[in-house]
Amino acid sequence: MMLSDWRVFAFGSAIFAAFTAIFGKIGVAEINSNLATFIRTIVILLVTALIISARKEWQSPSTLDSKSVLFLVLSAFATGGSWLCYYHALKLGPASKVAPVDKLSVALAIIMAILFLGEKASLKTIIGGILVVAGSVVLAL
Image (cartoon, rainbow, N blue to C red):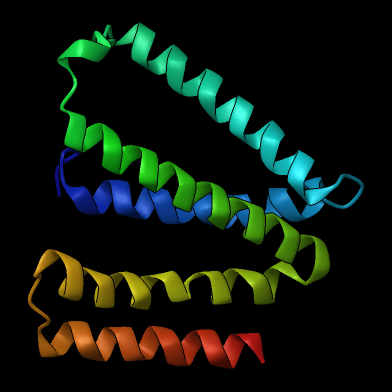
C-alpha cells in the first residue's frame, strides 16, 4: 500500500475521529458544546491555512469552479450541523455510545452515494453497511 492510496488516508481519518471523540468528550466537560465547536473550527481553520500556505496551494477565488464552491459550502453547512450535534451528544452522553451512533454515517453515506452519485452497491457493500448498522445499534444500547 502506497502513501497515495486512499486507504491510508481513510484509516488516518478513523484514527483522528477516534481521538476526536475522546478529546472532545474531555473538552466539553466544562464548556458549552456550541462554544467547543467554535473553538475546534477556529483551530481547524488556522491549521488548514498553515498547510495551504506551506504547500503554496492558495488560489484566486476567480479561478475556482463555482459548482465545486457551491457544494463545498453545502458540505460545510452539513459539517457544521454534524459537529454541533456531535459535541452536544458528547456533552450529554458517553463517548463509547455517541461515537458508534455517529458512525451510522457510514451506512447513510453508502445509501446516499447510491441514490445521489449513482454508485453501484455490491453485495459486499450492502453486507458491510448492514454490519455497521448492527454494530452501531449493539454498541449504543
